[in-house]
Image (cartoon, rainbow, N blue to C red; front, side, top):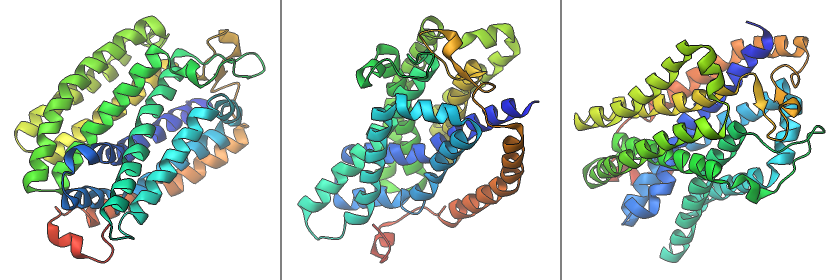
Length: 342
């Protein structure tokens, strides 16, 4: 396998890891005003992701860093083309991070309500816009031969882009509800269970609609038709989605969450595999598209980066696994009495 293809797949893998890890954070934050009817419930929800959310966002920095180092032209064109959408995501993520830290600084219901609202917006907006952004990449971005974006923010809010945004939002809400089921008990866990069973049918319908729309709006299926064995990715993704309620009916929360993670990874790679070798396809003319080959760094740079990744990524994953195990216990109301609790 050549270096460009290797880094293309690593690029997709990093985005998948980010969506799996930070996805449940987004889901919990989006559910905050709907499941958190009391201050104790809201604190339980926030503390279920409290020790992990900032570490999960490291994968976003890693995915962005890989784009910058391995495919610098893509990085430049992407950030200039999707500038408005990416800035909205950035401001929303800043708002969410601040909301965790500021919420309990003042003993005031109004103060807490404001920051809870910020956490909701800082979770729901990125979840939606990441879906919109990736759906538009799958569809093709109107960039010309000079890499100049011929559109605006509203160009991205097309039906296919919005369908991708809805898919990501529902995907993360389900993922977050399952995480709450793992981390909490009693009434909040039962609310999470009901949420999953309500969201799951809508997610199935949206996923089917997205697959169908991708056939007509994108060229993602070209690689699958050339290599039919790749359809196994779609089949495994569908199997993971249908495994979610099967495990949940047995109260196997962790396995249900793993199935949800598998669905997120599969949904990501459905698009990544379909895109190859394109990284940033042009909807104006395929000749203007940025690919893994015409937008990559030098072979020397890619080789050095690969050595670094082979050494350090396992260390990062090992540390994160340790952190997840450290905070794997089911929370109780007593945990809210700790000084470091949100």
